[in-house]
Image (cartoon, rainbow, N blue to C red; front, side):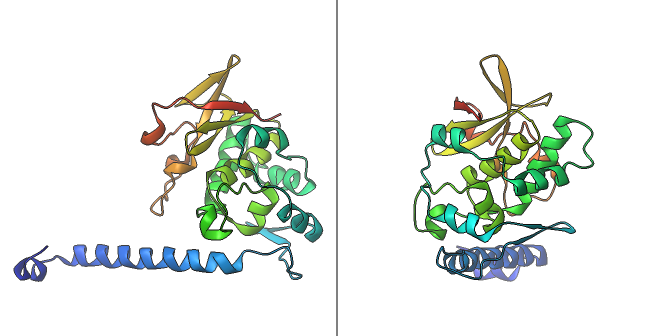
Length: 234
């Protein structure tokens, strides 16, 4: 504990940093509280089906969204890799839009990953739907803009797959990443002769503003020496 003299001698910079941290902690707590009540429920009639992405509006059929909320949301990675639907018209349209200025498949993957990392807010499943390992369909993640690692990679994987980019789910103990086929730099895992470079949502923090921290190939230190189970998305 600081003495009175130390408290009095706290610099303005320390005061500002302390205030910011306190506000952020309060904001996260309040956000989780709001998340419990603002996520659309299957019984809701007025579900926002217009998605604003940059300067363009995309539409999702409300019946599709409500039906998805009633399906199983099993967190099994193998099952997820086989059922991830990247053929939704909206998924295809958004994937095409996000990559309209990309000049290579690698750049397409980077642009999609950057979009997903900034689109979704990181919240644990239990704080939102009161259910552990609730894996959202990509359309659910687009509408709700909440989720954890499985939801990030599900959305990113579907958008990349819609653009013909090879992807796989990398299953770790208590975590999941997306593996992306291509000519990237950094960390990768090999499966059946294919190098899958990691896209790790774990490294995102509330302080992350620099694009390089989102780059494909970056892996969090916690999982740098771990070996995942690899499930290519069919």
